[in-house]
Amino acid sequence: MGWIYKNCDKGDEYLSIVYNDNSGAQKLFYPDYILSVKGKTWSIETKGGFTRSGDSADIDIFSPKKFDALHTYIDKHGLKGGFVRYDKQSEGLCIFPDN
Image (cartoon, rainbow, N blue to C red; front, side, top):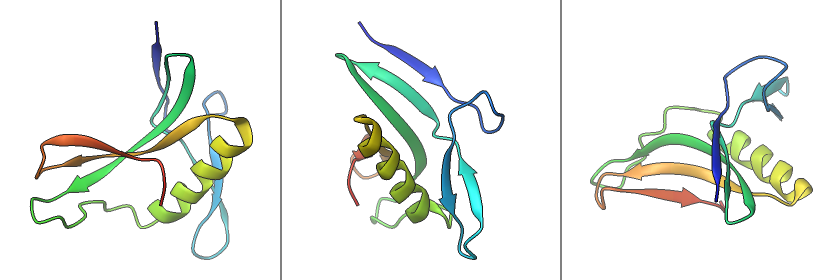
């Protein structure tokens, strides 16, 4: 049996991960979902998907920095995780656990 938790976008009571923006300032990033599947805990961030031609529809300029921060966090805590994006060509959700 598993569970799913929708994380919020701000507040001390929610899971946040520190990353540095392009000027080096520390910012907080709140992964969208925390879930448990078959005894494994996942931290998931949803991002803009891919167009039918394969172009990225992700408008977050800090996605690469957030991706790196997420993986540093999940590696440190022995979790699973990644970015989930919708692929219009396959009409499916794709998880990106690696760069």
